[in-house]
Image (cartoon, rainbow, N blue to C red; front, side):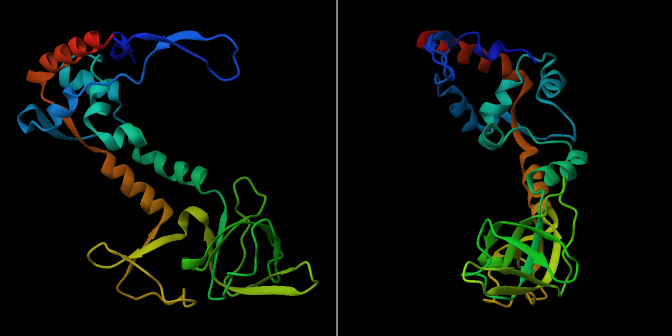
Length: 252
């Protein structure tokens, strides 16, 4: 992918990391409002849906006959600039596993004052043990690192999970559900797509009309949203880029 986007940026001295000497580098804080003006002028852009696996440079070539204008997609679409280019659909599962690699246990037990983060816990039936990574109280969930790569060692449903606290007391909960973290429920939505809160300490009985949205679902939905972008019309691209570069040269 080319870097012509930076050709009109001024150079300033930067210190990278622990380097004592500064080096000349493009002033990436420079910005002009011409792209914002284009965003507000609906006659200058089209809606476009990114195909699975389509890259910024290949899309630029497809629309404009050159790879040089890939950077306009990031300036025209704030979500893409912030979150990055959408990944291919076939990469969703592996990405979800990388982002959410642990096991999730759901319980109706009040865990607000027990099962602290960093505590080693053990399943009484499965013999599975792991370290508590996180607690999500409003979902009745405990995220546990079982030490596997990836974490595939399971606790059982309806299994008692225990540990001994600092005072020598055995603390326990009963799991009502267990899954890979990426397949755990992130939240529930009603028919209108509105997030719904679960009844306190009754996490196993959500409203039957609600739809569970897992971490994997959420990642996939966000990725799909990123695919819907605005692109500058081919007949306007050269004029917009020309004006953009002129503004940038004036800022040098």
